[in-house]
Image (cartoon, rainbow, N blue to C red; front, side, top):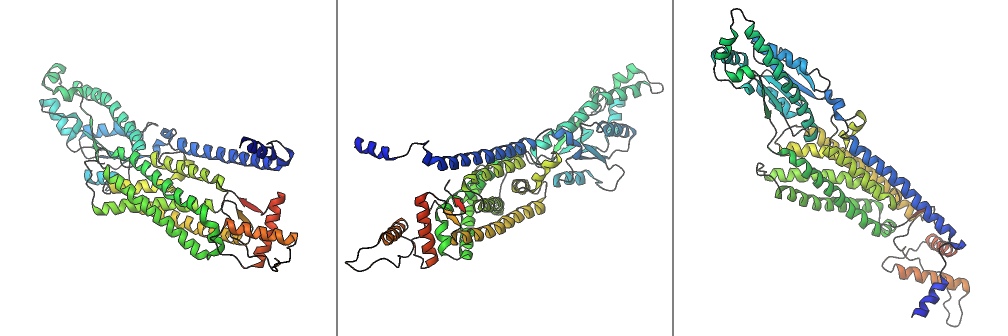
Length: 499
């Protein structure tokens, strides 16, 4: 056995033999192409992943806060002036003043605007603040400094960005506590006939030390911030699993379909399989979300189907995009499309496009961002309600990539049928038997006839389950291809290999 093995090895060529030069060059070119493509994929993916969350403080003025003073006292007006001046800091959000406007004429209207996403937050000077402070300083009445100002926040807009904006707003208000306390004390001491000692004795200590502070009113549900991590992972799994299985399945069966089935039926079958598999995966993903829901969320049957529909739209957009790549680029580059698309979408879901550099705000248009908006709106019962925009974006992406994939499938089927595209991962269907083969018992076949017969038999053995084509053009083309393969020549203008 060992001797036979050595004999077989002697018949094989060494790697660096001159006869294998063309093979070595083709292999090196393939490695070089992969190096270039995946270098580009790596830089695009990492640039989007880091760029989506890089130095967002430079654009913090793009986040707006509503400000309104509901108290008509001089003390409240003085505090309002200090708050407005404090938010002029370049590291603070943009403050829009509505004190003298008919818009947002109540605290409930302001909270509703923040809830719907019209503003990142709000600062409200509460009604009665000046009178309560005056009574506490002059009569020693009970006083709660946090009742002076309310800071309205809403974390379901985007947790990471909202936390940064909220911290900046809190920093402004906290920095004003000391200066406002000093100002109020000086006003008391410099008042006509005021005695500092008697004022201190009769004043409420809390009001004298800290005449103003703020309370935070977060209109988003409790612990909503943790949902972002869970939803991002779930969307990623739906995208990858929902598209990877159909794309690999089609690699092994698409050539017989392209050569023997009508193109319209191939397109319909492919779309049906993609949608069916995506439906199967998304139902399971929805079940996972429901299984690990928090105690504060009590979903209904409608919520289940709504989350399922969101997952399905997101998955179909990615699946049809991979369909386009599979029918357009070489299979060895298909994985690059997976990575680039997935990282860009994760960047949009985890970091979000808001407050980004203006270039990275193109993440508004990716499916993950829109799916994240829809899911957050659903989980918070309408908070940051941008459903019209989000649903439209995902439907348009799904339709766009499906139409493009339809065109590319028809193009690929035409090239395969015409013999201009060789798909080496599947044996070709057998050709019809050569007409010139001898049929008489005593007649010996000629060398040409023997070669043609051998080619036909080997073709039929490799693909016995397919229907022979009666076309004489296909027969001659396959015979020419067999001779070309024996001589080491290229058999088609475009060559597709298995991954």
